[in-house]
Amino acid sequence: MTEQNDDRHGLTLLGQNKTEYPNSPDEAKLEAFENRYADRDYWVEFDCPEFTALCPMTGQPDFGHITVRYIPDTLCVESKSLKLYLFSFRNHGTFHEEVVNRILDDIVALLKPRQAIVKGVFNPRGGIAITAEASYPNAGQQSLRE
Image (cartoon, rainbow, N blue to C red; front, side, top):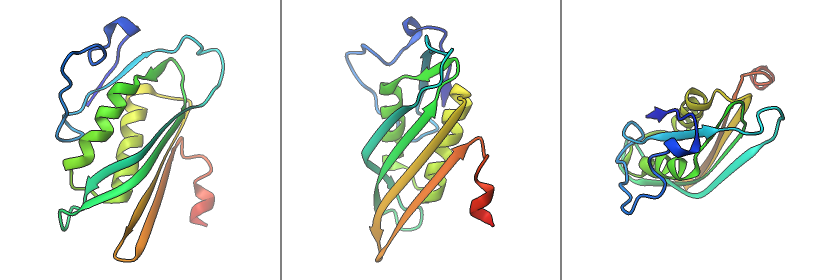
């Protein structure tokens, strides 16, 4: 699932002549590189407007828009590994809420960022659309429960 690298030279997915697409998030390999600007806070945002997964009940495709935002600490996620990781959900049965939380958990496990937010805006199925958002750390989430 996740692999930590000390520098950019340790990345294994970049520069490959052949790209192998993982069949599930468990098979995917997220990679990271050293954040050379760890002395400052800044946001990194990845936008995936063509996200797909499978409904765990029907096997039908679900389409959505995933946004991953984080403030790195000592590591940054390598974008090709994130692209392949997100692509790995294409054949994976999961609920929308699980997708967002799984992505957040895997990003946090890899990077240990200062902050992270994962948002999924999913296309309507059966006449209803779902938006799910998870954040790390959980500060500020309590007000949503009150």
